[in-house]
Image (cartoon, rainbow, N blue to C red; front, side, top):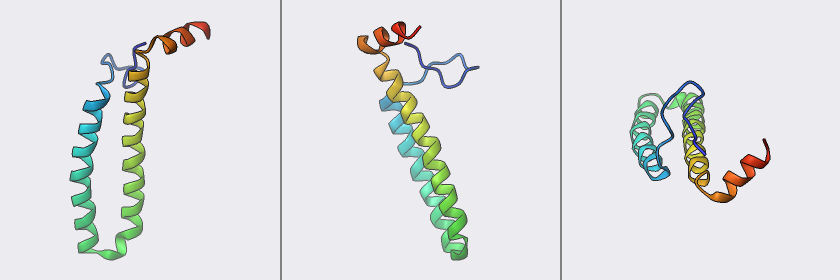
Length: 85
C-alpha cells in the first residue's frame, strides 16, 4: 500500500523514523519561538497555547501518515484493503 502526503502529491510519505526526526527538529525551533513570545509578552499565553495545540495537531497528522505507511507494508493490511474493495 502506498501512502501519499496529499491527494495531489506524487511523493510517498517518508519512513516513520525520518518523520520523527523532522518532528523533533520542528518542535525544537517552535519551542524557542513560543518561549520568546511569552518572555516578550506573557499576556499572549492564550495565543501561544492555541499555536502549540495547532502545531501538535499538524505534527500528529504527519506521524499518523508515517504509521499508516509503515503498517501498509504488512501483508495483513494489504489483504484487508483488498477485501474492502
